[in-house]
Figure 1 (tube, chains in turn yellow, red):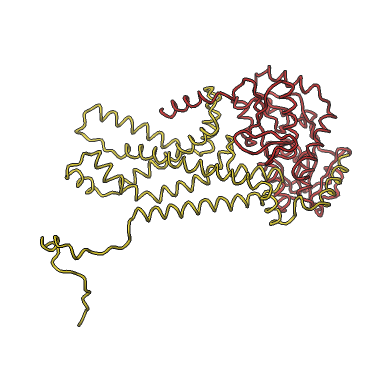
Figure 2: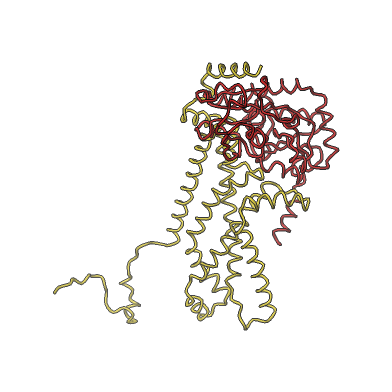
Length: 284
Length: 268
């Protein structure tokens, strides 16, 4: 009965070639026709998780990074110093653990571990956001610390000299400049997140990769379904990097400016003595 | 610490699915004809949790039957093959109906129901390849072969081929078929329903079934049985599922599988 069932199915297949074409492009269009919406929804889930988690990750990263940056000064009262050392130690452990283990292992450990060891049945969505955010946070913490270190000491000294409190100096002078410096890194993290959410398939998040795996297992067409996923991933990452580049440009402000030569106050005060409007021609 | 508190608080509100009257069944939804995903509810497909797709296939038919017998609502959870056992052990799902064969290794960490399908073992090869007319396992000598990771096909059947060059095990059935189709391997071993589906997707492949000859793959009877995995010690559910399965005969299994094979997206 087995060979007959096989030959029956194969002839049935040959009769109506409308079912699954044999060429690559034909198969791609065939899959898109039937599973296009699944792909789009998968891509939507991927985008949603990576965008929101990158945002939360940045918030976590800024908190942790700023604490790690704070110097332990001798003039602080003993309990403040002790608290700072403790906080720094704990945050260091957090950063090392989440930066030093693969996200797939973390997802398995957190999602199923919470259920098995503590009886907590987390929602899959919460687990997904939680894992990606906390991961991004660990990477961002180091980035933010680096960003703050890259700002010249003179900036802090200047801010303090004009009478700002250390907190104001941090908020209005240091962080805005550090933010601009680490913008490319935030973009990097977003793009990494768009790609790396694919590991969430181990906890059952139906994002783009898992959706394409479904199609691959339904039609047994690996190349075709993964080719579609690849194009979608690439589209998302390219659009994301272009948008971030635009945002960076906006943060930089205008790229050219005119020197004010009509500012009478500047002239009368003697700060500016000569209008540099005309170029001097060199003559030997 | 804050995260832990938040996690606990959030989880408190997420208890709706636990126990109660819902049977949470895990499967890949990517293993036709056992289980697959489709975009509509045709044939009586069941919605996949956390997704707008639907699941159907032999496993879903079986899950629907069991849920009905138990008087429970059915919830299909789509999971990765490797995380299915973990999900059952941790209690994230009540049982796995996902084409798992009952092996002694799996029995150490999971309980299994009585078989809900008997999957005969076959080989797949290219119609134009050297093994297309093989009559038995000894005819496959020297094959470059592979199969799926953590299966009896890879662990027990492949070493029986004389002089075989066994490649690394692959993570899924589609990956195994790509390996055969691309020529990386020239033989793969799998079960009959998967092989039938594969021959439809790749008309250049042919199925070698040695079950009528004396030169078949030698596996113990219990190893080709496919069972439902349940958390170790959950004997209440195990007994109920076994009672429901006892009402079906092996002939019922075959006719249900033929129905699934005919209904799979590949065949339509």
